[in-house]
Length: 462
Image 1: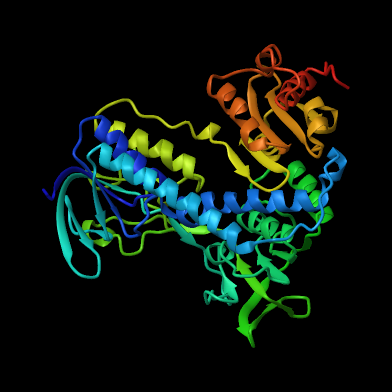
Image 2 (image 1 turned 90 degrees about the vertical axis):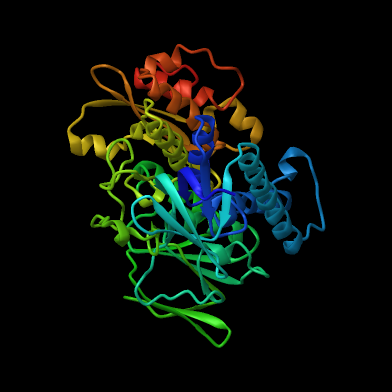
């Protein structure tokens, strides 16, 4: 096996393996270095995929227990088999990881198992604990992703105090779990264990949950989650969390300590650049620990590129995928572009929350005149048939041109609905373009059409 490659990608996550696959399509001899046996990165192994599997399973369990009678389905004696639920989650991960491995083999991409480290311009070393394999590369892409952000006073021990990784595999349902952080990771994992019977207390430093999400949507989510049994303590500064006598204790300003069964640290993620060998090529990080790049993903060192969570922009798997493909195109001398204004984001709670484009408060701060259209799911026929009517769709459109500036959804299957909005915005659509497009009836997507009509104060359904 030759150790010389046109492209070496350090990191086998969504950005890394997509970059390698696109490079292979373009005729490059590509290689991927990944330290974990399973490809797919944090997203597939201990992030996006397993959490969604657990969210789906826990939702079905909760619905079967509580909400099927309204459909005329009477169920008794419902029990939880947590081991089976966890096994299903693991099988989903294993199957998808094997699929990625198969794609790389089919594309004749060399896979190295170990940790990749740059060792000078055009040189990479793979270390696996047994041996070191030197590689030479015309081009290198750093796609090492992110790691859990730290919080002073809170040190995960892998047992009582842990991260989302541990929260995906608790061997039993905690009686009480304290979640530090009211962002999407904390709320998704809170949803899983709340549905399975845990008491959930969320401690958030800010005066609101879901930072980065439209404020009106976040307020609606707060009310809904409280109805689901979440306890929120906002404006709370956590000082310490540690294990004590087979339990955990959380201390924070302005209140008595909380004793609980588990603590989940979920205050965000940080770029994972440690040990990549940036010093060997004189590459400096920015003030937030990210690798600076230009619009073509080039670093300050010729032949070295970076994508995904280690560079600017939202830490989202699909953003990394877009960058991976575009970066490979750039290396091949082709046109490359990622439109960062239309990268959607989804929170997979119930109801789901999804957004693309500008927040309403952003438009206000920037002095951009806009019109707003809002439509509730309670007035949507399909939502009624699903017995899932919480939430709304909100469209923000430029006051002069009617061009869509942002779309924010909280409601059933919002994560799927946002794709229409993203596609429309990618093509510079107006809200009128949305409502003049015929939508199937009855569907949830009609709520998007009605919100577009509301922008022009001509909603038909209410």
